[in-house]
Length: 316
Image 1 (cartoon, rainbow, N blue to C red):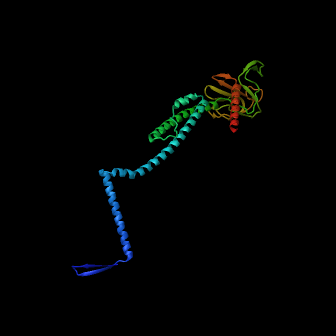
Image 2: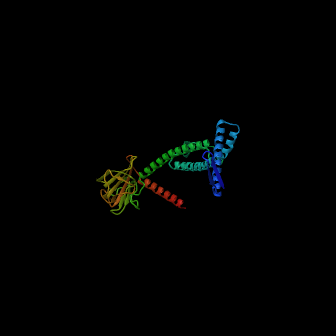
Image 3: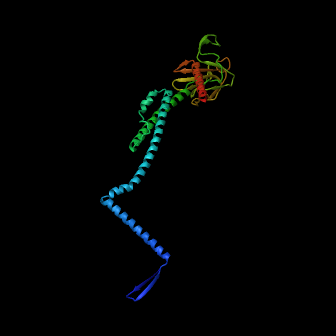
């Protein structure tokens, strides 16, 4: 294609040669410019019409944006449903914790009903219905309050159970001589030395010299001395005006002021003091009054048997 351009003023002519490729490129560029111009004009007119409130533009804008709004609502609904399901699972777990808390409260010596009363209502369990964002936020606030109160209550229960455990460790229920048999029981008997009737204020455990003497419970050594009648003697204070006494030892491994644990070796069997042969003389005193140690030791055997039965039941 040839185009001749003539300039009348300069009396000149110029010839342009356009190939088919150049014409095609020029057509494409012109089309793109025309399309961009049309889009820009439509966009400006559309926005101006919406801003100015021209008739018909508001409904067109709603139709254009409706799809985007619908997709956002679907996305939000899916997320709300997922959160509601998760919240329902958490509420179900809270009900399980509440049931467990009641049982543990009973073990701690507390009234299980106090646990439910103390917690109050934990809010309605989330069902399969659609929830609004406000309802979901309210349910989560209720769950947060309920979980906080349950933590506080279970902390009290834990403290009570810990106190009970400490108290159990401070009660002399451990055999002071492992596997030892009782020789002379608590009560009145004929004294083996003078032949008169006298109160025997403890239990005698015959054993070989050097046999370990174990602390019947945890406590603090308050006496460690050589007594004319008791020989090498140790007294352990367990609190609550409860004291145990271990007499006639051949050797003592603790001193006054030492803290001892249940089952700890504190001395060795001997025959020191007023004794007719190697044995441990074991006494339990409560508020300054001698008690029958066999009652404490029997209680320890009962607890050990019960614990063994519970362990076997769990294994089954």
